[in-house]
Length: 249
Image (cartoon, rainbow, N blue to C red):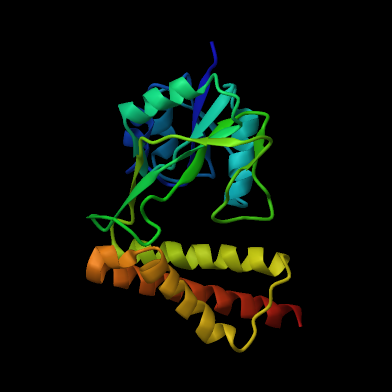
């Protein structure tokens, strides 16, 4: 009988962790990798039967690799604290365990500021979340927007998970500032440097990709707003990258 570990990476997620873990109750093991929460995240997780391992945060890739090491299941399903999965997805996961695939992509439905997204890359926002332990790892050089690297092919599941992504505008902008700093470090390590034309072209390209290429227009004015936010994210990433350049000069 193949076993599944449901794994969650946390940092001060007391508002989300209970509902998240309850949606993972079908798993054979619940594992929480916490980076030192100062709220009730750890206590709630343990009350719900999760094993909690504490690891200081370095990057998301490092946290996920640690989870793959600590998990005891044959497979690991990663769920973020603000995500939920239903019975249909759990059933598909169980049916996939005997396959020869090294991992499975899962469609994700983003719900942003209460808006159920239809386009803009927010749906179908496919995530590589079901991983065969021993045949998957995360590249430490990619600290944000990390995707597992597989030793073998990947399949696809069709039942979606739900992502209650950003409940307040302040949360949206705070997270994008954090992601921009992480992304800038990743790009710096890859040898990328800011050029004068980047300041205009890269934010414009980000807006076009979200709103036109990825059909953000299907979400109307809200889709245009989010495309503009992602253009701002690209600009802030360039700001952080330029700062790294000045510090190394």
